[in-house]
Amino acid sequence: MLNSFLIMGSGHAFATATKKPSTKSSTTSSVRSSATKGTAPQRKVTASGRKLAAKKATEQRPVKHNGKVGKKPKIVKEYTKPPKRPLTPYVRFLGDLQKDAPRQNSIEGNIEFIRETAQRWRSLSPAEKLPYEREFAQERERHILERDAWIKSLSPRGLRQYRAAVRKRHIKARPKDQSGKPLKRAPSAYNIYSKEAIVKKRKPGERASQYLAEIGQEWRHLSEAEKAQYESRAAAGRIPYKQAKDKRKDETRARFYEVHKLNT
Image (cartoon, rainbow, N blue to C red; front, side, top):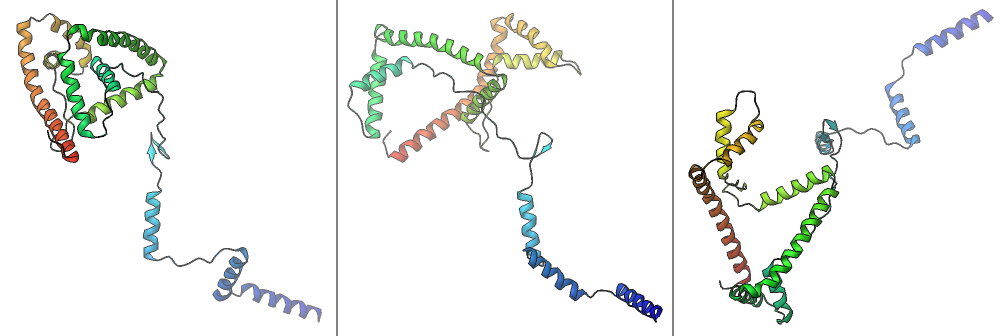
């Protein structure tokens, strides 16, 4: 009796162990478990949802910087503003006249005042201009000392950042060509001579910098007649740049007068 009961019990346990669970019961149990844990059940992803997820992934993709994956670091300026340049003699003269002149509340009045000031400055004698020029010379010497001390106080990285900022500002101020790119400055007479001399002397595998000292000495020993051909070529190369610069100046002046409706 006892043996038959054990055999029946073991058979029932074997049957329950080999019986496959239904999919319906498993899904309902997963939903219940997710509901009890506080998480929503998994939803079906559509094609538009996959496109949106891919777009977000590309927008939030980290940027490679210096061979490493991560956000591009923000460049911190390691230099302060340089000392201000001294005022020119004419600007000092203009400031003295502005103290006594009545305040102009219109653009036309200010332009007329500046024109009269420029005519008065040109009519001054050298003795009358001397006090302004003396003040400018004194402040210029002080500015040179302050600037040298400021440059020495900069770190090597800060000095490179400052020079790059100045170079960028100069390039931005250059006149543009038809495509909108800034024009390159025309080479000087020495640049033309050194370029041709390097082509003649340079050998394959050699650097051009090792010939610069020798070329500089040769240029200094050239006669005025020998330098004249290079200077004429340099002057001819400066003509297109000067024309583009004058054209931009005229366009800026015309735009200014058009905005403020002034008569030239």
